[in-house]
Amino acid sequence: MVWPCLCARICLQLSPFLYKPEMLREPLSILRVWEGGMSSHGGMFGLLAFTFYYAHRHKISWTNLGDNLVVTAPIGLFFGRCANFINGELYGRITNVRWAMQFPKELLDHPQEAERAVAACVRIDPALTTPDAIVNAVHSHPEVVTALRSILTPRHPSQIYEAFFEGIVLFAILWFVRTRTCQPNGVLTGLFFICYAIFRIIIENFREPDAELIGPFTRGQFFSFFLIAIGIAFIAAAKARPTFPKRMTKHE
Image (cartoon, rainbow, N blue to C red; front, side):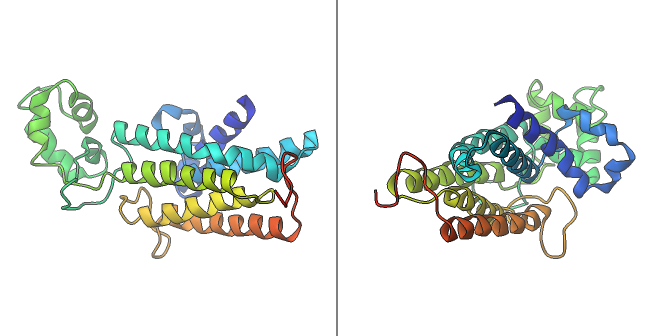
């Protein structure tokens, strides 16, 4: 499991270069893993490439290997989105729904709000002169939390939406298909890509874009269309030349 995780991690870190060309001026930024910069799409493409190599080298079914992996993938996605929520990152768009929340890291992306926050927080602690210092002080200074309530904007907790649909719902769909139906190798993999992409495209409408748009689409939506195409290709190939896991036959 070490090599698949390592391959996915490398692709997670490399993927931002696709939509943040300014990072090419500082390529060593890929080594600063503590700063985030990961993309779930990049991780998926990385695992796709590694499993193909692994299956070819060990002469096992690539699609069967993929089917076994994707069933558990939503669990990782669930905890990943929960971590995003806990860290207050990848927050949602501005809204007035009753369950809207405020995220201090919003200050890092909105200079005007950051200036107002600094002006309010230096009165509490003279050391709070930067947005980063204010974000770090939220957990230890209740007065800072109170001051930020009138500055931060209410937003969708889109990380929770993603954890529910990309984690719980997607896992339920894949588990049902795996245990209740008899599908040829590759169908589950294709279904995973399609369902994940559809959920991602929908939820991106509630999530604050973290990069420039590509036409009318966010980066997450744009790359998700490629996942749908890959998923359709997997299912079409599986139905055209069906092979089944050794533990089952088509008539079971």
